[in-house]
Image (cartoon, rainbow, N blue to C red; front, side, top):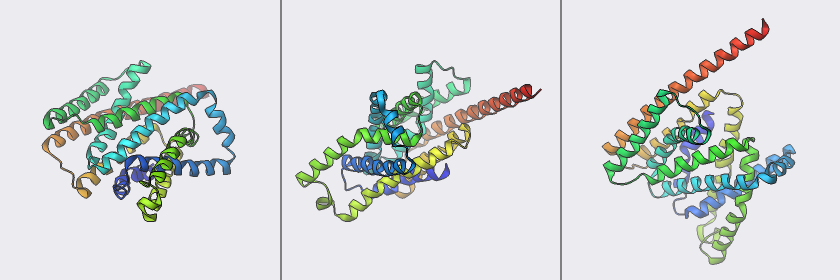
Length: 293
C-alpha cells in the first residue's frame, strides 16, 4: 500500500519530464500502454474470459467509469504541466470528503457529527482559497468530483481492480489510438515529432499506471479499510511536497489556511473512521464468541 501511494505521490516528477508533450497525447499513451500490460497479465492468468463476461451488458456503466477516470487523468497531467500541482494535491486531499458527501446524497448514508464537521471544514477551505486568491480552485474540484464519481460507479460494478481497469482502458483505446494516428499523420506527434527519448518516457507511463494499481489491489485484500484510507493520504502529501519543494510553486497564506482546514478535516474524518473500524471489529469478535458459546 505504501509502495502504491509513493509511486502515485511522486508521479508529478515523472509527468514533469513530459511537460513538452500535449496532455491529450500523454493521456492517450497512458491509456494504451496499461492496456497492453494488463491484457498480457490477464492472458497469462487465463482471465480474458472474465474480462468479456465483466463487460457484457455492463459496458455502458464501465464506459461512464472510463470517462470519469480519463477526465481525472487528463486534468492531473495538465495541472503538472502548467504548474498547478499544488492545486492537484488539494483535489486528492479533498476527494475522501467528497466521497463521503456523495454517499449521503446517493446511498442515503448517515454521517456522524465529526464527519459533518470534517465536510464543513473542507468546504470552508475551498471558500477561503476562492475568496483569498479571487479564483475558484477548478482543478482541485474537478479532480475530487471526477474521482468521487469514479469511485461511486466502481462501487456498483464490484469487480477486481485489474479486470475493471482493463475494461475501462479497452473502451477508451479506440479514442486514444485514433488521436495518436491523427497526430502522426499531421506530423505533430509520434517519434518523428517528439524523439525516441520522449517515446520511451511515454512507454513508461504503462508501468507507472499499472504498477501501483496492482500493488493497491493486492493491499486492499489484506489490509483493513481504515488503514487503507489513512495511507492514501501519503499520495497527496507527496504531491504537495513535490509542488512546494521541487517545482517551487507559490504557497501563499491563503494556501496555508486552506490546507490547514483540509488537514484538520481529514484528521477528524480519520478519527471517526478508526473509531467505526474498532467498533465493527468488536462487534465481529462478540458475534464470533456468541456463536462459539
